[in-house]
Image (cartoon, rainbow, N blue to C red):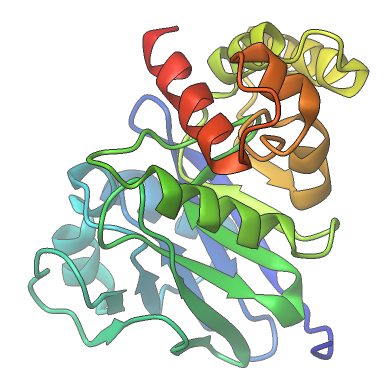
Length: 258
């Protein structure tokens, strides 16, 4: 196991339901934004923390994750790291693919190619800091919509995430938690841990509190998409005894209609 390194994070709302994330290495002061849905929100978070942006790590090139990059680069001179696949982004300093590494000061992250939501999606895993930045692959009690036919790809990505230590903290790309909880309860109604977490989601939504961060252990206990190996989820989509990837696809297609 990699030696533990300390990291500081700030999570904040961007646009209506996007999540902005900053990760900082306290040893060097280097700081990265994970995607830039809205440059103004990122600049405000930096100012409130007193941090200086050095890097931007792009999980995927959907507009709501990259549209703020030009303004933020102009304001900060940050170095942009983006997936090698998919459409080009002007001014990218480094393109990355499976097995590459990224650095934020002394923090070292591994790049995973995690297609399914879209072809170019990558996830950044900072194992030493116990941090995961899955973009739109994973949400609390949910996962991203599949554009195209990448259901098996997204299932493999979720399986890979589920193999991480339970205390790995994931900062996700959107707060869809209240809607995800309602669907999860429809698919897995007898899950006591899920019932408690759905109540938490309602309470946070009522209080206006952002709910876009989670742990691998919490998702293994409450996320129907991660739990597609469980008999209860197979029964929910009338696929008892069928492979988990088929159960996952049926669940995701049901969620699309939910």
